[in-house]
Image (cartoon, rainbow, N blue to C red; front, side, top):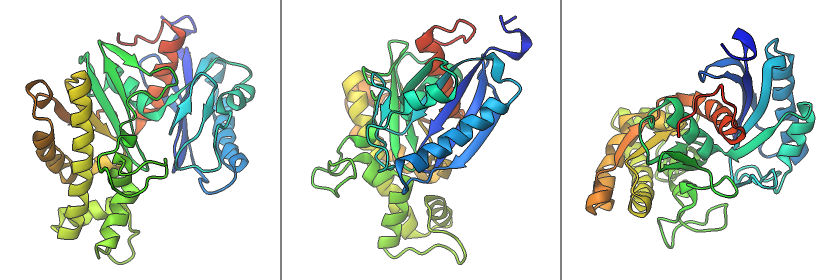
Length: 323
């Protein structure tokens, strides 16, 4: 029995990205008891974006379970700076060195607030209850509006000094490739994120079905129907992801690469070419053994992981975290 009884403790969780702000109250078994969602006004001012976060927090605080909340975890698109409590998401130009932790702390009455990158948060979730459970060395990736990632090494989550370790989306895999909003060139994210899959397909002449928005999901639908332009855009994304996974596998000997996020919902349209390309990039014996698997927790992983990372950092005993 938990010290807060059958109704707790809970950890509040925020999953912040360029498309949406999600919030939840998470229990010690990784279940979401309350869930809140707002669109991210990514093109607006920093304060407009913060208003969406405050609306999510306001709904969470109105829940009857709120008195049993002992901490708040934030998984944010990066880069983040966990030491300073600031975030500078590549896809949210209004937030540069934005003091998210102090603002959230003030909004939740001074509860402990733990910030980590969204890829690290997803990794915490997948190692706790998902597809990386039981593996001591794993890469977990979020392929969505952006591409993030995190690492489990030696059985423990490795957030790094600022909470960004494993950020595979900004490894360059095309030395003279397109400029990335991060300032580099040819990044995995510039090739493999959902918006870039759709952009590349459109540039090649692909068009979505009448009345359908030109999204990565629409490209995936076309690819499943055999459209060669759609398949080519996913193949290029898979190639970039494979090159990034191979680099990580060669560097730190991961056993498994877990791929989640909205783009992973494409299923075999993504995973078949990804595994094919990986066999051509990860050629050394120890790297060639890495397995690629879909995430186990779906879109809940960011929220579960934000709570898991916070519970682990704060030593909240009721949350039975691995490692």
